[in-house]
Image (tube, rainbow, N blue to C red; front, side, top):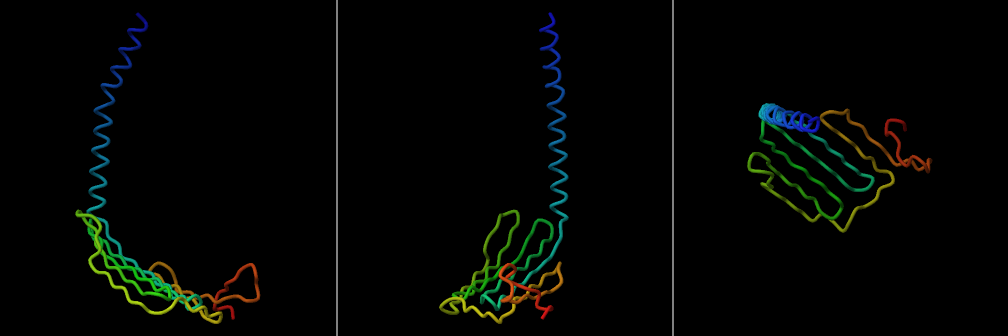
Amino acid sequence: MLKFILIACLLVQFVVAAPLDQTAAEEKAELERIQNESAQYSYGSNVQDNINDGAIQREETRDGTKVKGMYSYRDGYVMRTVHYEADENGYRVVKEETQEIGDGPQFDENGEATVEGSLIPTYSIRLDKSDNERHYKDARLN
């Protein structure tokens, strides 16, 4: 008899919990839909590395469920720029440009690398030839 009562209690628990779990999942999905539809941001970053002859640039804007952006890099061989969009139809490249620019990166031990971003202050670094541990130092500390 005790087994019967225990099994009956477990069954009742599952029957009652299932609709609650379904309701919670539906509420969570609705909240995520609302957040996605109202999301907005815009940012950009830019790295000009004149020590190692490279560059990276990125820009992205989101308005609700639509995202548009681009990224670009230069590595001494090519400069490549990709423009993209993402929305309810997925991610897709809308334009791509590639230009050959050389035979490889040209190292410049006296060069400077500069980092810019929409969320950070601009800063630069230089190769630190006096410190075998750090390798780079803040360009403002000359």
